[in-house]
Amino acid sequence: MLSFWEKSAMIEADIIIVGGGITGLSAAATLIENNPKLRIKVLERGVLPSGASTKNAGFACFGSLTEILDDLDAISPEESAALVETRWKGLEKLRKRLGDEKIGYEGHGGYELISTKDYDCLNRIEEINKLLHPIFHKHVFHEDEELKEIFGFNAEKVETIISNPLEGQLHPGLMIRSLSNYVKNKHVEIITGADVVGLNKGGNHVEVEVQVPFDHSETIQFRAEKVLICNNAFVNKLLPQVDMKPGRGFVMVTKPIEDLKFQGTFHYDRGYFYFRNIENRVLIGGGRNLDYIGEETTEFGTNQLIKDRLIDDLKNVILPGVDVEIDHEWSGIMGFGPNKQPVIQNVGDGVFTAVRLGGMGIAIGSSLGEKLAEIVINN
Image 1 (cartoon, rainbow, N blue to C red):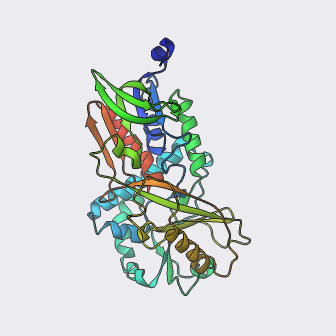
Image 2 (image 1 turned 45 degrees about the vertical axis):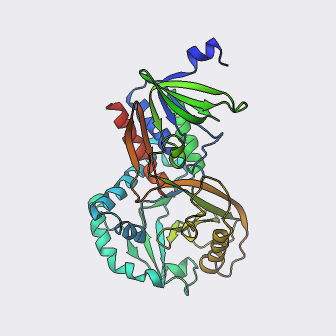
Image 3 (image 1 turned 120 degrees about the vertical axis):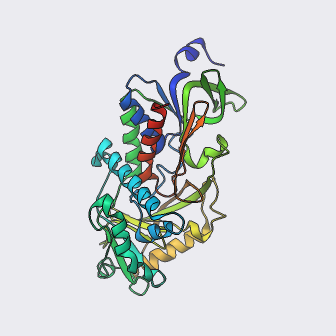
């Protein structure tokens, strides 16, 4: 039961954003930059953001060569280039808004390990570089076969390496903390532990129903003129009409490795597998394609089939002959659709949504949040 004081000062807002990850906070940032007088509340169900924003691998990437070629099987070259541009502009927006130091950004470049089965992609480097040239005004992808020796990879498993000097890496925890502080300093209110369980239209406002943490039989009704749903993989609980399925991603980090030979972000097998350095540790993750059905879940956890494959790749492909120990592991939940295009729309009755970030949340989240905010401003 709410007090008079709570009802009069703590429940209403001009705009409520559901989801305190990169998309929701980026939308809040754009809105408050546009109109500092707006009363904005961000409702996040976790004590910390509970989707993928702080559980991803920290790749500041816009798509490897084979990922882009994979996209071209489903969408047109123009759509593929537009998607890359959205990711790139999102990364630029994030870095400009917060600064590299506050997100732990390091520009060590991006790389893709090419095996025999993917070797044909080398014949299409020129085609993709030409497709992306209007965006970057330079060639993005280059073959650097000698890097497999320099980086210490298993030459029997890795045929060659494609490099991309424009990609980098960051610290997702620092990123979300800095983005949260950025909007809070502009008087956006962030409420954690706020599990939104329903939306109801009431006159000229939308009621946002939040479950009371310590008494699940009770709810609190927040109210706003406009509500933005930015909870990505968990959107179907509130908007079942959105065509999206969850996809769990699994990540591990090793103990420190003496004389680690590489820095940067790395992909292989069409981007489904990835690894990077964190100082002198190695983070490795992915493998969702080994068990699509099993990983189509909003439950956090470990798929042993995927974990075993990642450890095998770590020991036999990436760090052959190196004594490797796993220090930490976790999972995060992403949102996928029939193609890699995100969903951004005015749902109606004061409700808007921006979700379905796929595996490129860091890159696309800032752009998506900004675009959603612009739609809200113009409505």
